[in-house]
Amino acid sequence: MSSSNILDEIWQSYQTTLDCFKVTDRSITKKEYHLLNRTDFISASTETAGKLINLSRSNADDYIILSLWTVFERRLFEYLKNETYIPHITKRSLAINHINA
Image 1 (cartoon, rainbow, N blue to C red):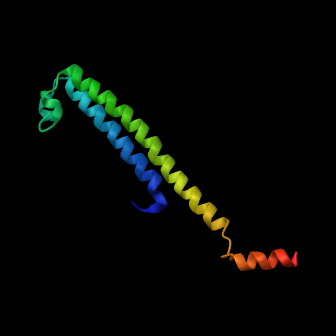
Image 2 (cartoon, helix red, strand yellow):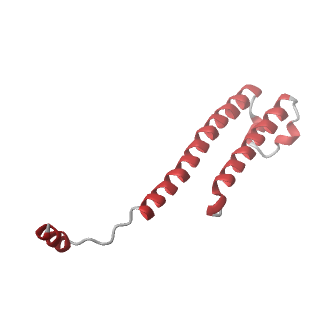
Image 3 (cartoon, rainbow, N blue to C red):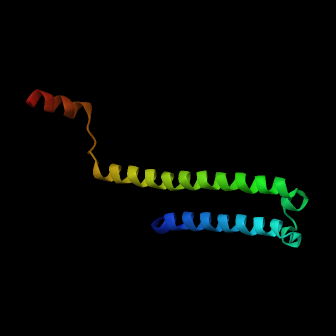
């Protein structure tokens, strides 16, 4: 992921995940089980599959918030670090400034 548009990439990934949940739910509802080959849903009951989809959707909602917050926090720290740069201060320079004050 390039850092210039990481928020867009995170959001697009989230939207794709939601679409996958919709397709899976629709496949189960319409009993189009051939679309579920080689997935854990093929052997799950409709009720169990629905619960798994809802739980996964809830987790995805939580993870998108966490991901976006993490990027925001990292950029905030980088900004503050760059804006509040203080040259290296030694104990000696502090003592000299204290004496001269």
